[in-house]
Every structure is written in C-alpha cells, then in structure tokens.
Length: 151
Length: 143
Image (tube, rainbow over all chains, first blue to last red; front, side, top):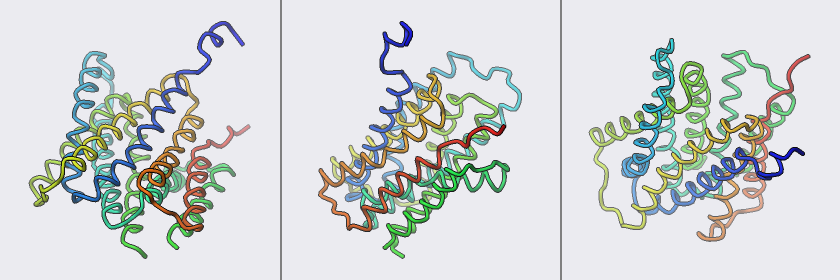
C-alpha cells in the first residue's frame, strides 16, 4: 500500500457510490409517502421543482468549464440527452403511478431497479454487444424475480 | 396482473431504454452537459403536464415536501453517480454497488412505513437486487 493510499483509506469513488445509494434509496421511500396524497401529475411538477436547484448548479458548472466547446456532434449528444430526460420522466410517472395504485415501495423499488435487463437486451439486439455468463445469469434471475414478485 | 406491477414494468422498460440513449448521448458530450439536458427535458415534460392535464392541487404539506424532496434526491443521486464514475471507480463495480439502493428503500419501507412482505415477495425483492448487480458486471475482455 502506498503513502497516498494510506492517507485516504476510503476511496472517493466509494464515498460517491454510497451517497448515491443513500439518495436513491431514500427517494423510493419519500415517493411512497407522497403517493398517498397526490396524483402522478402533481408529483411530476413538484419533483421538477425539487430538481431545479441542481439544474441551476449544473448549468453554472457546464458554462464555467466550457466543456464540449466546438465538439463535433454536440447537437446529437444534446438530442439523445433530451430524449433520455423525456423517457426517464415518463418512467418516473409510471413509477409513481405504481405506488399510487397500491404497489409497496419495498416491492416497486426492487422491480424497477431491474431496468438494466432492458438496457442489456437492447445492447444485445441493436449495439451487437456480447453478454458474459454472469450477465446471462443476471438476466435469468431478473425474470425469476419478476415472477416471484408478481405472485 | 396487478395494475401497480404493470406500471412498474412500464417504468422498468422506459428506464432501460434510457440506459442506451444516455450512452449514445455521452458518446458525443460530457456527462455534465448530458445531465443538464436531461434536467431541461424534465422541465419540458412538466410544462406539458401543466398544459395538457388538470392536476389536482389539493395536496397536504407533508406529501408536497416529500415529492419535492423526491426530485432533489433522485437528481442528486444521478449527479453523485457520475462523480463516482469520474473519480476513478471501475464502472462495473460502481454500478453494481449502486444497484444496492433498493435494499435501503426496502429497509425504510418495512421499518418506518410498516410494509410487510410475503415470503415470495421477499425472495423476489432479494433476487431482483442480486440480478441488478449481476447485470452490471462487465464480461471479462476477450483474449
């Protein structure tokens, strides 16, 4: 172990990863509480209000860093990012509606977290990526999980 | 099939597609700019909701705070996940670690909301979390 490793025992990426678990894990929980008192449309509006401070911060950061300046295909990147937001947002509406219609947070959160199975299937079909044995096992287990949770 | 499960699967499919579109986006631009436009799309979607639907504005303070917090938590989570990937974490390890987030939701919902799971549901929830981790592990490079 080097001096640098010793001075920071916990790597930065691990801290950010744990922060992500805490933030997303709590998000499912507060969404369930919210779902008891509003429809999915109001939630979308208030959710976006909660996102605004971060939008302002990121806009400032992007502007200041000048990243992607003069980069080719920038418009293409923005197009896909915007589409990601629309699809993700409609996904959020469906996630919230699952909670409104009586889905338990403790079941809906694990089911919806299986979204990488779709990404993997699409990559397999359209991007011609190959799956390893572990991913095939994950895909199979994902179907088993949905079957068990639908019972 | 229960209505909630159908909605949950719709969310799963849409979020799964974003895994591909996000990759296509970050092939051309930085993850920060990509995230910024993701947020703008969220604003556009909200504008469409405001114009195209009649939301029921009768909401209590507690649920309103939870909903606003939901947007902040989910957005910040996306931002910290980019930070994790950019601060030297191996993508497959970072993403499989992050896949543990539903475990926290399960714990909070069971402990604080008093949700009860049947044996089948508990097995399913655990299988789902393990499956998400396995799916994010990259295959070993060929050769």
